[in-house]
Image 1 (cartoon, rainbow, N blue to C red):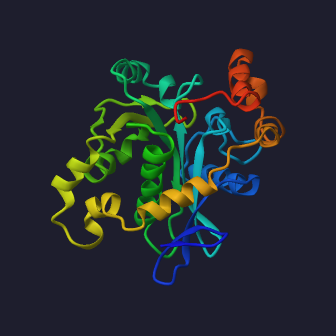
Image 2: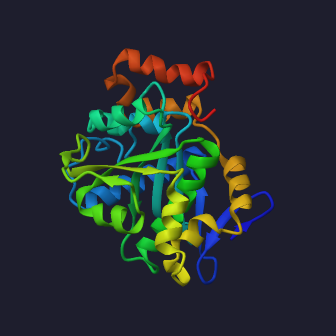
Image 3: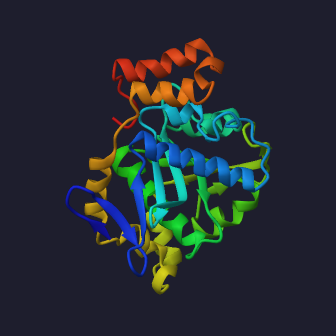
Length: 277
């Protein structure tokens, strides 16, 4: 459900004790970055960033149009996911699968990327259920806010079956490459948002309850309210936030090529239009 009033919150669970919020403040963004770092570290990933701050914050998180979602239970972070619009900065997957990304762009696809998915195991409730709520938000944001028609991702190789068998991504590459940020094996994946409804209807529409993901994504009676909630709560990162996360809490801006920082600053200073606009 989505509650109205000034707080506009997406809630779920037997007693509405779970919520998903748009991470639209410095405090909420810091919670999401810390949750991803702590989750990745607990899994034994050999992380290449975040050791100074304890935050999983990348250059693409600093793009002002990146949208992050945070799932909480009783105000305790339990899951997060982010979605990035394509822009002159490119997307994280460009560094790992440049050929596949070029192929999609050459056919005119409007890309966005989902990344930094993390959920806490051992909390009451299913991490898969939390993930599905986060992906519902991602889907609506991609279509209604970013106006993308293709989602791409570099997914952990051991999660491939979830993306092929459950989320029905069009393609998950059979081969994997090493992520430069986690040193984990990842696979290229992408989902055509224009054919997603037809594919989900064929695969899921006859199933009952939570197994009917066609109803979950495309027959959601609260979709209109959710889109309004997303628009109301979407607030780009400010210059002060950029300096906080990119310079004070990390060395991202100092370690990034000056020409790339100049592009990033352009989006802040001049309000340059990006793909989602």
